[in-house]
Image (cartoon, rainbow, N blue to C red; front, top):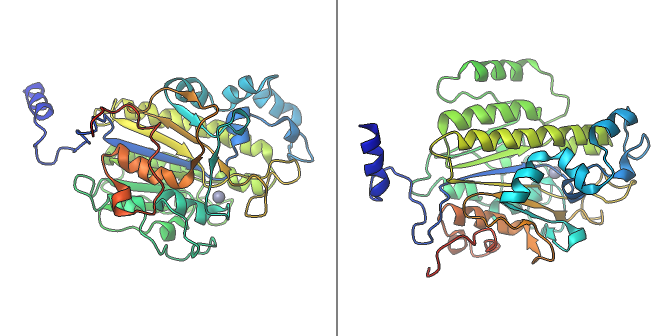
Length: 372
Ligand SMILES: [Zn+2]
């Protein structure tokens, strides 16, 4: 009986409440998971541990030999796979990786400021705004993509965001149809399962090592429980610790966090593939809000006066994205294009509603039927 019902639903696009994929464009994606890792450099994504920073002075390493054992190999290809095995054994083979400057693939921030709030604003709204010029807790003057999606048919109530940085409550204010969980905020949606109950307890008990930031492990595991229970169609996960450790000039901790984060990306992806709503119908995008300096002196820094801090990167994996792997000699792409790309994957035309948003990335969406 169950099989007959699901077949009937599958063959009938008019079923009320069923997701409405962009059938005209022939896309398979019905769900999007967007992850950002704060202030992660393209240098680590594409080169793994940076040899210039593996010491006590420039990298602030506590135990140089231990870090080398965990993250050092002779070639950049070995180092990056050791640092981020999911990115390099799965995404690089089945998806796309943009932003390796050394191979002529550039991904840039266009807001000119190269720090967090302006970056998240550009990424989520699809355009920079000169009024967004600080990390202060000020309500975002613009609507962003998650809020816009939460007003769309078939997406209302199915849009959610989890962030380590508490300021996301201002960057991305919650509204009807959109759930936002930011900073040390317990998850009180529905009946928390045993795992979430413990995570909520830890949020009450842990003294956060960083001001304004929930430890990423609490954010990630809460997000994962939410994904499994609520099954949002657009899910945004914003992790933060990479930036905090970089500002502290603790390259060892940056590397450790990246290795852990890569493991979480794999868990997120494999969990999604184990759930019928997501299996084969979900696109994962991973990016960052800004880059950082490129020298042993200025790598902890970023901002408008730090050369190279405008360079970011983008990873995409999903059924509509051709497996181009690591892009080389590609078109230059920008942070302001991510919002419209996410919308297009969900069958929505963000540019029609927000004309100043950057254009969708056609190379990410190339698995579409001609004729639209
Ligand atoms: Zn940042």
